[in-house]
Image 1 (cartoon, protein in one colour):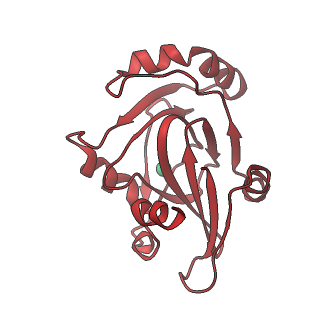
Image 2 (cartoon, rainbow, N blue to C red; image 1 turned 90 degrees about the vertical axis):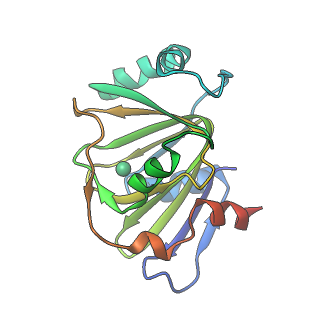
Length: 186
Ligand SMILES: [Fe+2]
């Protein structure tokens, strides 16, 4: 279930969690993050290629393009046995920003966003059907866990796609990773 947890950025002190969608949307809206639920009813094979995923979600993509005017779109499709799973995981796991805003539509599986805003960390567990839009220059990181499983359509207004500026901070190591976060909810 999509879940939001807000923790002090220092890693000490009480964290608070919400699973109620309206509560999550409100709290994220307060930091400029859009969180929406879209239809993600198409069943795709685990090894579906990028064109198959994009074709299946053509209507949603067209609607988002009309709203935001994206210049590039791609698909990240990860399964636990993906040969680059560990390398891809570590790339997104370090705190970074982008000059572009970050829009992700999870059409399958799940992933955990960590947004570092002011003195708080917002952990957003995104599930199938979740669409999240993180404003440009928001400090964040992302974890998919040791056994990643998700298909995510990524939208960029920058023609070059994903360009991250790493902060060099080790803050990500002080928060539960995807595996422990999900275990804790179970
Ligand atoms: Fe990012």
